Length: 84
Image (cartoon, rainbow, N blue to C red; front, top):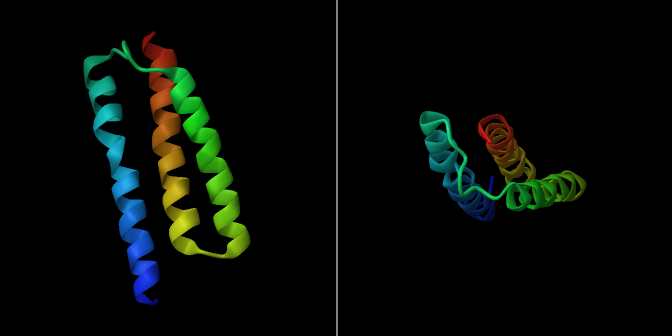
């Protein structure tokens, strides 16, 4: 693995963990007030497209991190639906 892949994984890791505090807060408070489901749906669609792109160009930092972010984003959507 070359330094560019490490850079890609580092960038992807930062993006992956960015939404975890929001998901945790929503779960802990049992409230999704103020969360825009439309934003998370559009974001998730983008993640699906990035994952497909990463698979096509065979770049692990792209498809792995976007797949994980899709899981986190999907969890937020589920919590939004559950607690609204």
